Length: 334
Image (tube, rainbow, N blue to C red; front, top):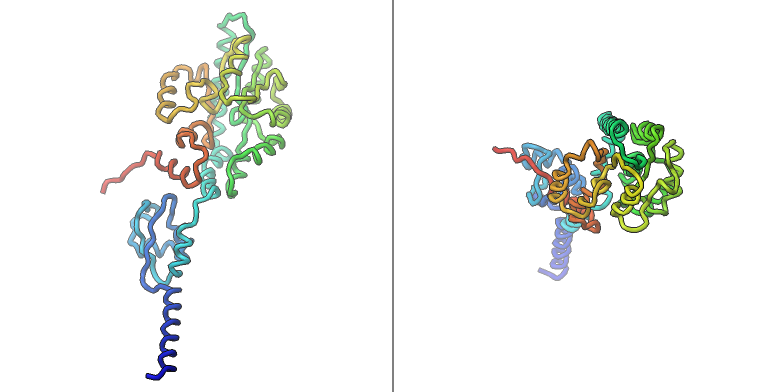
């Protein structure tokens, strides 16, 4: 065999290696990661997710488990490009997709409105009962949180969907300055009624002082009573509200507290595990619906921090995993 023929054969072999390195006609496999769905896997690997269902004989297209091996049918991309797709990082944009249902519920469900009206109806009954029966010499007051208690920030949460960033002062401060939050259903009517009965309203909120002007404008534009420096107790130091609650209690008979976060009522719930917060809730159960009235907020709060063991700096992927690990799942028996 002459030298030219050897060189020609080598060139052909190299070309074959290049071709078959680019396309693998035999099946490859994919290991399911937390947060994966068949649609997402199919998009990464450029395979129709319906083919994945059929090829792997999956009985339920919605049930795949982390660690599960899936066979990838047909011609697939090169090992190098496939590996690059597989290791795509789970991003904050991915995590923000989990806001959709909770935010949609707040904005579009009549049930959310009904729960808010229910809360303020209970508040009115509590106030009327106190006016009729309490003989305290102190003037009456009601303490309310601001966000998701009397004003609705769900538009800010909706803004995060589709973005690759989460809550931060760089977006929250402009939202406060915009003063565009709407009133929670029933809040304005109740607090106006309370003011007409001679009751003062105090807004104890963990909005920081940088947002004071925007918050004041927002509340005034909506028509809320008692909107001034005396009655707006924004955060200046600790996020624990006990010191600010005590300022009001010193001079007033506080008829009731209203908030969306259990920290709005007591420090017993702050920086505690999920189980400890459950225990504290059971301990104070007689106060709910009487002295303490809770507004619905499924989008954020202390409860989320408890899920993360207060590791707010965890990555988006880690937060996704911790959320799903806390789910109590039904295991269907075969």
